[in-house]
Amino acid sequence: MTLKHSNLGWGVRVASAPNAGAGHMRRCLSLVAAMGRPVTFFLDPGSSWTGMLDNIGIPWVIEKTSNDADRLMQSVQSNEIQNILFDSYNISSTHVEEATQAAFCVELLDTMRTMRTQSAISAGLMVCDASRHNHLCGPTYALLSPQYGDAHNLARLRTRSFGKLDRVLVTMGGYDSVNATGFILAALDQASANFEMTVVLGPQALHFEEVRKQVEQMNKPTGLVTGAQDLSQLMLDHDLVMVAGGVTLLEAACCGTPAITLPFAENQIGQAIEAERQGIAVMAGEFKNIQENDLTALIDVIALDPKRRQRMRDKGLNLIDGLGSKRVAEALLQQSKVYHGS
Image 1: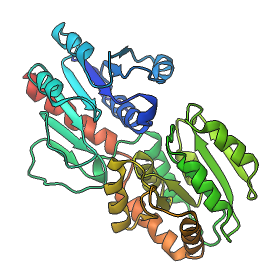
Image 2 (image 1 turned 90 degrees about the vertical axis):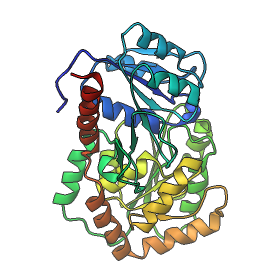
Image 3 (image 1 turned 90 degrees about the horizontal axis):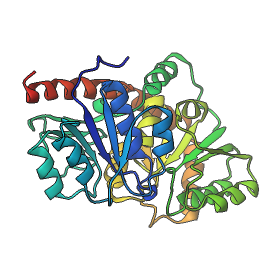
């Protein structure tokens, strides 16, 4: 359920170039859906998200470069935007500081970087100092779409047998610039365990054609899914998922799907380590360091350990309930109300 609209508009300056992956956009879309406020997305040049935003009726503006927020600030100065959500590593501190002088600003942080705005969200697994004012931090605030609350409830209700590993899902991001997908498929195909595979990859992925051909030549039964906006049902339908360590790792935990992580971006490493510490995933290693035969061996170990997969499922379901977007929306709307004195 979305919250009641007000006239205070929100601008979302989000990393949205193809090489930024899909996680930033997905979590911002989840949050604004829960907020139910007038919103405009300010996108990087070359963004492929404009058609999708048009389809759901969200206006958008293309910024001049991936590093600036000039057009967003023009909308603030014209009073079209009174609140700003930043979700990009590229925006300079100068731009953010300028924005905080003119509007209520929130920044999404993947790491414990210095808080630069009036409010911040670290909607991952990392635990932070609760004394930091207006900092919403931890898995309670995981920004997932509403479908994941429903998927979480379904996962809790159904009895899942963790015997033989039957189905493995591979989803390494919509763009996957390093072709981690192809590497993982090769390792999975060499595993002694017999299972089916499903690969999720965006049609705009840098190595899409290479992966498509690889899927056709796999020894194990393998399917390719393109353009998937909602992975919740796929998560529920699979016994194990291979992920990098970003938003998709949180989605897997919410659905009770055990995960193996291979982080390839700097901002994914800390969360992958924390996921293993909390028992919801196994970290194979940083993608740049892992060998194919080591990954194959790990998959076979996990396949033969149903009790471990059961523990990962239970801990994931206890950690993330799919209601984080609603919690964050309520908190930010209250903070905005205080800031604007209304």
